[in-house]
Length: 272
Ligand code: HEM
Image (cartoon, rainbow, N blue to C red):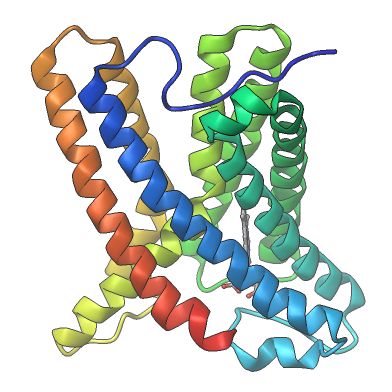
């Protein structure tokens, strides 16, 4: 049987210890935040769906949300949310070196779950945005759709390089796919602190504002750029570059912790 190799931040080429430690620190913080997002999906969406209280899903704000009578739209929406949650969950598991080493079969299955859930969630995201019309505005709909297109590209590339057993390339594409699938999570951990700063300055974070649109595009561009920097530092013999990128990842871990705390306290916990 084909074995799906691991897309971990710590496989070959062996990164400098400082670089590896910094990436691990960021991943530990990020994965705790992604667990919190998955728990929100299960606790809020799962609870209402299991109790049959679909109207109760509109207790929190959505772009469109539950619409009585729109069976297809509601199905696409709920399928999107649960498959998105499954892809987020599987993405975390794929990056855990201990799971890969001790339970390779689980690792292979979560790889498949990740790819299928990410692909189907992306297609249902396109449906919600462009057919159901769930858009905050055109610019943010384009941003999410570009994120979605890149998810499709890197999932296919990750799958193809795994089939060809091109492990170094597979690892890079799978890491890109993991970060892109988490674009929706990066957006949420970005807008809560940004909203707090805007409030402190006496403004509201408007969905049409440059700040919101900037965060929307950065939610998938910035993680990809940071990964490319990490991969370049890993390949480079320059100790200065490795130290600089290690420092950057420690700073990102702190920013991620602030964003996760904000999103968990003000967005996810209150509706559970
Ligand atoms: C595969 C990665 C993705 C994941 C994990 C994901 C996850 C989610 C989750 C959990 C929600 C509900 C959020 C909440 O209640 O706070 C959501 C909503 C939404 N997603 Fe995604 N999503 C992904 C990709 C996409 C893409 C690529 C698009 C568009 C092309 C998209 C369009 C939407 C829309 C329009 C909504 C809001 C629906 C509404 O409020 O009525 N998603 N997504």
